[in-house]
Length: 135
Image (cartoon, rainbow, N blue to C red; front, top):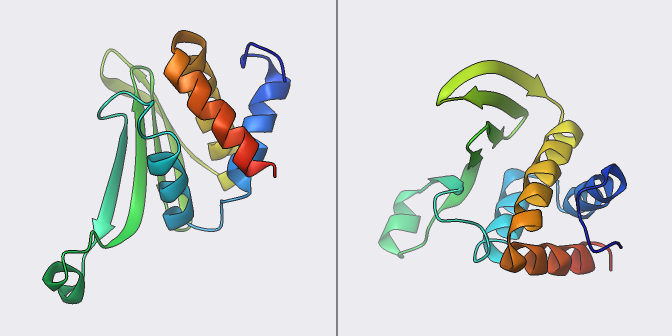
């Protein structure tokens, strides 16, 4: 892998690592919150959870049902059976596309790659993710 994570080949490598855990929202949520959570800016990843009565009584967080990744120029939303990419300009959604999970992962890889270009902590977390996802 090159030092820069920007080239298209690296985007596909990142997407492939994420794809290994793409079975459901819960898997992707675990990957994003555990491996990348510390490196991502606060508020960038939001997890919507469904909490049953048993979850509330036992102090559990509940089951993830939606994952939203927010950047200044995009919003990526993942729900079971529905992946969406929104293009944002000055806080206004100008384009909304329902996409397949693979296309959503490539969009997410692009966001992570951009972030890694500007942050050493994000670059290290992404390198760790690629190492785990490809082993």
